[in-house]
Length: 228
Image (cartoon, rainbow, N blue to C red; front, side, top):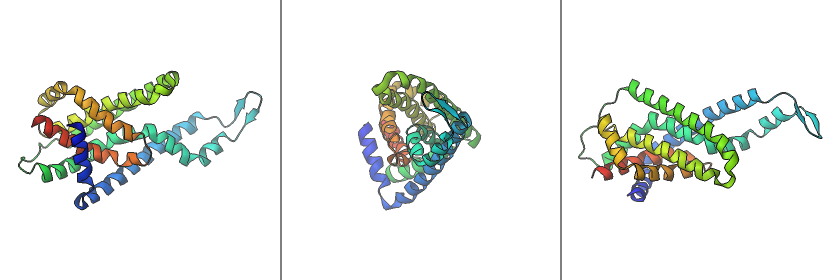
């Protein structure tokens, strides 16, 4: 069911009619990534001293220059972590557009989706964005101690968080909140697996730009197949 939803969504996005949405999604993902990157660099710049005393070397004054010259490489490294909040922000901003496109093609018999107030949608997105940032910042401390297992923990934690967010946002377009939560609890193992399937490619530079759109389409199919 999960792999089938993923492959169907991939086929949807490769159709000419969906390429505009895919291009818009990539542009939005890139813009969000650059925004998060700029914020991260600002924090790193604020935390980095003008001079740094190193053992056997003495004082060095080129640390900030190195950060500036290596900004592209830094962005690629940071994208491993930053694409998770990017995907979270993207979900709240763009999920309806992708879901409507998928439903119009594959589920034309459905009535219009529920009208979720913008204020509620924005609040839910911001709350989840804060949660996912806080969890990932806390997890950074754990990554230092588990070595090669760090990517596995990264995928597991963010697969759980993203799977829950994608699923509940898609479900609330068709169900009220209590019903959406009930359906989630009954299928949390499958939702977790689908979330991990999205989290893994999110950690791959360039490929990760496509994943927020693909994730929204995948979870739309996944939700309808669960209900069916």
